[in-house]
Length: 220
Image 1 (spheres, helix red, strand yellow):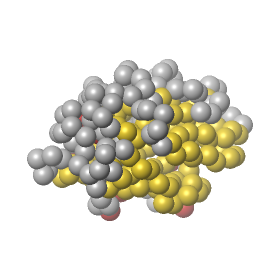
Image 2 (cartoon, one colour):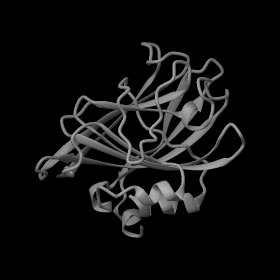
Image 3 (cartoon, helix red, strand yellow):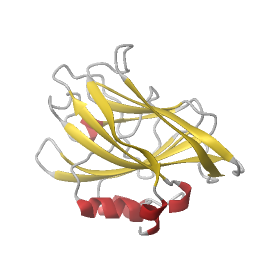
Image 4 (cartoon, one colour):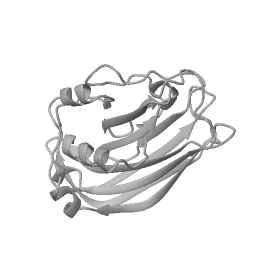
């Protein structure tokens, strides 16, 4: 995880990474810094609609409200039927304000499947959803589905027992994040584009379809 994220930070692609939502307020973090959910802030969600645990790893650079460039690292595990939430506005210093209209976020991420005790193959079935202005997404907030099959199922780390989000925004915090997987366990690569609209709604577009990227994983 760390090596993947470090490489992307060096690439300095203008991205912000988010994690996931659904509608649970109970995020977990290796550094206790996962953002709380604000009422009006901009959030992005990932729901796991599959039958196995899903992992999504993300990294990116974003500009905070004070103009500071931030690198954000995130590693998430989501149980079947589960979800986790990170509030982007809170993370970037906007508090209870939605992100500015036109905010564009390019996301690079790796995905994998996990279960206890692992083994066999399964299907990735997750969904992204973004929104602002309300605590939880509305029926009109668009959902972007991501599916892929087959994927090998790896053994779920013993310390992962519930929906989990590890987040770091500084090198010091990143150093405290103990990787929970290997590159081979998250071989599915994808890119998404997140755009915040004037009314606070969020459009999420897949700009690089899911593909197995073992060649990329092997160099990092």
